Structures are given as structure tokens and as C-alpha cells.
Image 1 (cartoon, rainbow, N blue to C red):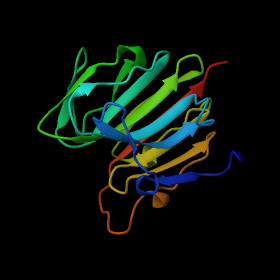
Image 2: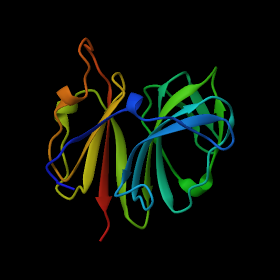
Image 3: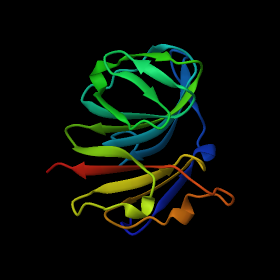
Image 4: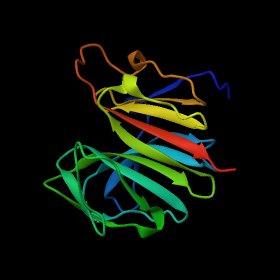
Length: 180
């Protein structure tokens, strides 16, 4: 893969994958370096009913509510629209109770043996400081439901994320750092 490329993925272009338990669907926006042996996975899930999260042993998870009122996660607490992402270990698989209906959520998962990372909210995406040791980073625009990501420190133009007519967009930035 060419490190100078900014990859753009629209949520509407990814078919939803139903969960085995029937409680929702997931759209995988990024599985890096490949879907079979990913170190980093970014997805958007629609949670339609209460139930436990799937267990992902050896994975650190970041979870943010994009739409709906929010959720209550056992052992973590309430997570609502606008809150910072919560971080938890994938083997914990907390029980999820919806608050007044379904939600749409952003998930970033990182295999702990491969590296570490972050998921933060951005009000002013122009203020992003890209760490010199970042392996991969990206920005998700909540309004256009678009992810732009790149390997290395290359900047990402917000024009690739914002649909015409969106005046005030909300963004989430993730970073992945490979452990040596």
C-alpha cells in the first residue's frame, strides 16, 4: 500500500453484517492490514436491542455513541451522544442496555500484541497534531458518515469528509501506534 494515499470509505457503501445474536448489525470500515489478520479494526454498529457485547480477547476497544440516546454498559456506565469514547478490554464483553431505543456507534479495536491507540472527539479538526510515531490514523465525520484514513503522518483534507450543505460537522480521530 502506498503510504501517501488517503483512503475514503462511506458507510453507505459497506453492506451491514447481521450479528449472530440478532441484536444489531456492523459495517466494517477498516480492517488493517487485512480482514483475516487485522491489528486495527474500525466499524460502525447499529444496536437494536439489549444484550452482551461479543468477546474479543486480546483486544482493546474504544466505543462512542453517534446516534440515539445512548447505552448503559455493565462495569463502565452510561455512554451518550457527544461523550468521549470509552475504553475497555475486549474480553470484558459488557452487557449493553439501550437507553430509550436503538443507537449507532463507532468502534475502534486494537490487538494489544500489535500496538496501542486512541479515539478522541474533535470540534476543530484543523487542530489535529499527528504524533511522529503514528503508524496509521484517520478521521470519521459523523454527519457524512465517512471515514478517511492514511498510513503514516500524512494530513487528511476535511473536504474529503464533508458533504455539501453540512455547516457544522462533528469528527472523531483515531490513531494506531505499532509496538516494536
